[in-house]
Length: 106
Image 1: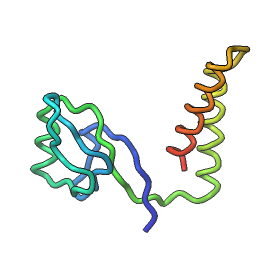
Image 2: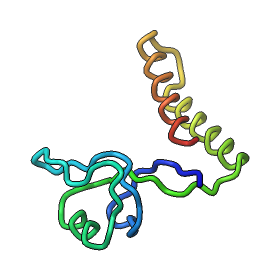
Image 3: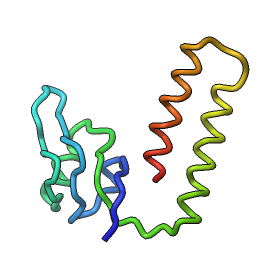
Image 4: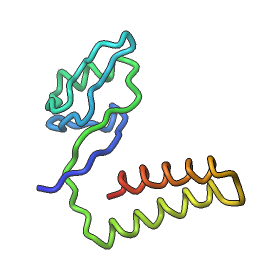
């Protein structure tokens, strides 16, 4: 099954979701390692802490047309943010942000 990585607030997490990136607490300790499967107890622990977002792997049922549309939307948003003339550093930042956002949309 094809999956994609998304960032979700703890309130949107479901039992069975797979942690895609380590979840680190405010003291720097790893609370959940990448690859862990979240259960009800783990979800309750996350809700009690000040964790804002969790990176998880979720099933990806999008078709190619939807993915292409999302990439086009991301591209348009980034281009709007970085519109106008600017320095080479600004152009490099735009390219970096655009590449990152496109990867997220894929």
